[in-house]
Amino acid sequence: MTYAKRLQALMFGLAISASIPALAAPVEGRPVDYQLNLQMPVTKIASEINDLHTWMMIVCLVIFVAVFGVMFYSVFKHRRSLGHKPATFHESTAVEIAWTVVPFLIVIVMALPATKTVVAMKDTSNADITIKATGMQWKWGYDYLKGEGEGISFLSSLSTPRSQVGEPGIAPTAPRGVNYLMEVDNEIYVPVNKKIRIVLTANDVIHAWMIPAFGVKQDAIPGFVRDTWFKAEQIGVYRGQCAELCGKEHAFMPIVVNVVSDADYSAWVAKEKKKMAALADDPSKVWTIDELKVKGEKVYATNCVVCHQANGKGVPNAFAALDGSAVVNGPKADQVNVLLHGQKSGKFPTEMPAWKQLSDSDIAAVITYTRNNWSNKAAENIVQPAEVLAARNK
Image (tube, rainbow, N blue to C red; front, side, top):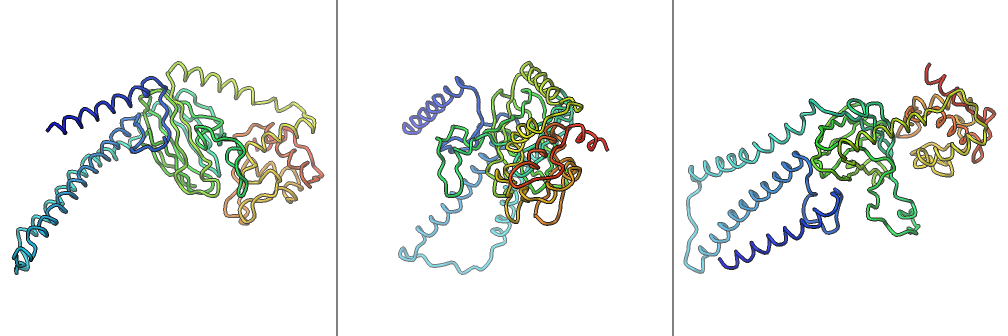
């Protein structure tokens, strides 16, 4: 009894000491070195999942101890060396009823709370904000469809520098940061204590949107629309990643959700609206070829280099080369159409996604950059935003 009290006091002290830094520091949901349990839940669903996990483990442990305890006791206490002889009966109706009814009751006891949680996970009704998440190789696209922030749209890509990642056969040259491979250039912002519905799809292969601290993991499947939801109860930054093997850059598709106060969320919405207005350049503006090439290089590095590579050579049997491409060196209208509507040529396993979310000037700039870079010498070597706008409105 004394040892039990000491153990209880020790566990209580460890729990208190572990909670002190958590209370002092901002909440951040991410993997932790030597973590022994699930991430701290910040939604009701995640809490229920954690409770179910603990409950199921206890049930399994009790069954394990009971079954193996009886088995080892029987073997030890009824061994031949003590003079015991094996029983001669072949069947027992009572035993057969018991080992059928008892497991059935155990399954029912385990299934009832699990079913309640699963049903709650699927209830996406009455959401305060609806966000569409589109998985693509290898980044996420987000569109705020309903609620405060409606109309905001952006791409979210890995922001960990390649100098920390390295290349096949090339060691990294920079020390890895604390959020290595779990940081993005554009984070999702949502208000605390609001129901957020996430509508999921993909434009190439199957991806999966997962935030462990929210208890959310839902596949994004091309041609299908799936949905899930969460309601974060604590302000903080929560990190997840694509949980479906989706190609060679699968490990480079992190998800970062910034849960903020209502006031901070409204401020973020206002800032994003202003930023989007600034990005909507006057389509009547005529750019010089040098201006377009400089801007296009930045657009290419942000959105295109992962698949088509910095040298424009693409990836053999996976992604088309732009260096020497018939489309890039051909009529510019065809290339504009590819960026606006995507293309599936059948030559590669994945299709070229549509990039309508880019501004007219971004599309014009990146096309101009590709037509004047590497070995490309297209006759129609410059595209203006007005041409992209005209093609967009057709």
